[in-house]
Image 1 (cartoon, one colour):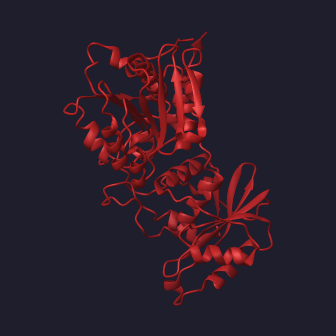
Image 2 (cartoon, one colour):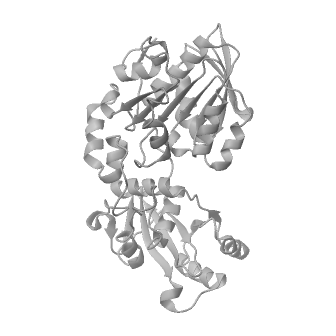
Image 3 (cartoon, one colour):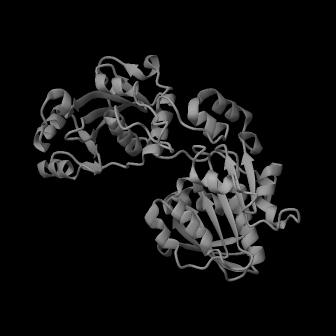
Length: 413
């Protein structure tokens, strides 16, 4: 098949290494808006380059996690290059063998989720590396991946959405692109010619604040002010009782700090925070034991069939207390703060989360929860954040399925 609809910027990102004006560069960085076609053009270009320039060499394909890499890159890539390359997956060994008929190379999959990930890629010799969503990876992993590309003619391919303007990748790679001999290309929604105008207009219409600046306009913008400025009482607050189809409870556990538990019910695709348990030992003048907090959990459930309790992963003793009683299924929460905040923001904006007016501490916190402007990175101020944490734990588990990319590549067989 051949690619029928591509913008000039997408073609440049795909074929920069074959252009005599840019073939002497060592790497390319593409950043900017979501849905702008960066991943398609870069990942296809990476395969074309590697298989036209090398045979029986080793390459790295990197994402924040191997699961996200498979979902966001590997699975769509098989469709994008169907009829051009043959891809064989060795899932248990985390590598691909890809051939164009004349050349065959091996592509190892790596996840760069934390500082320990650098050890996973250390020691391998690479002819090139493709790093998807590089701004979500730790610096140690990215630098180790770059250091492994020591084969003559090796190149680096970086792709990301923007973060804060003080992010290490922007400061050390994008801002120093010329001195590092890198190509830098910035993408916007209009650079994807297969994205319908109605979709582009919807993105401009529904998003605001930092999310809009970064993911729609593609700017490296500092987060400031309220974490959830899109929260609207008329849209996101309700009164009275709602009959729901399923129920879960989310817990942020504290001893000196407050404990916040939320009872959530789903009805018609909307999740309602029906009731809360909020205990602040400083405000009340005494601390509670695990068993006393467990009693509060039972009272919050109030005889309902609770699908699961999603609990602060650091609250080991309270998790064991819940398990010991054997009444509720308990699950440690996912605790990626910034990703969780983005998800909650999206759900608030879409009206998929609504808060009962009687959840007074949740409503108080949501109106006080602010970004820490002195942190040097995206991070909320560590106060008025306990109900916010349990809401984030809930969203990551119950609303955290990532939407499919709606970039569609028009092809002709």
